[in-house]
Image (cartoon, rainbow, N blue to C red; front, side, top):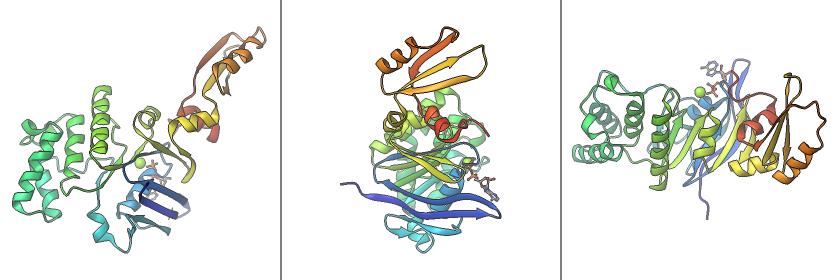
Length: 288
Ligand SMILES: Nc1ncnc2c1ncn2[C@@H]1O[C@H](COP(=O)(O)OP(=O)(O)O)[C@@H](O)[C@H]1O
Ligand SMILES: [Mg+2]
């Protein structure tokens, strides 16, 4: 049986005339890696900030494990860890000192702090870097340090806002592996991203957000299937590329065979979430 973990109802946040999030209805289940995918300015950070009690909604509500994040803030805070997009660690402290700080905020006893911090450092292979200043670490290590700092109180849910922005390909893959491992060890993950591949590689279900509104919600395969699993790109006279979507390769091939001879460039490929996004919005996820 699926257990509801994060539930939003008609969640709305306005900044003056800007509707950062509009009427968001969303349920994330325990045990998921849920991805919130959308371009810059779509409302991803605002949503995470409301869910993690850093900002109040204008209207609507969020519950985590049945508790309202506005009314039951203190109880809810025990249930989750959050890693903001921009480093939430103190750069002039060591990794261990940062973790100590978080553990004290959560009122862990001295022996609990020690046990938990050592365990987590080991979990992300940062033990030998534990006493280095955060500022001296690589981007990937900083991110891992931020993640384990947010996990000292053993939360059930982990929020990650654009966890791999600025990381190189290798560090990104390593972070994906860490997210998968945390998830298979029982942590529910809510992450935001504007990287298509990240949503496809990591997430069991993806919500696509555009201008504050949820415009699609499903697992990546189902989102692609609704569009058509196969994409045909055609280009005439190097002008505009046209995209057409087909249920399978046979249908795509049939279409291609009947194209007029002036169509020079033809690409048949698997559809991806970028195609889904473009088709729904007329824009690319990478567009600002
Ligand atoms: N503190 C704020 N004050 C005013 N406008 C804001 C604030 N935070 C976000 N916004 C606006 O809300 C919209 C959504 O922003 P954000 O949630 O940061 O999007 P994303 O994280 O998807 O890039 C944008 O138009 C942004 O400019
Ligand atoms: Mg953001």
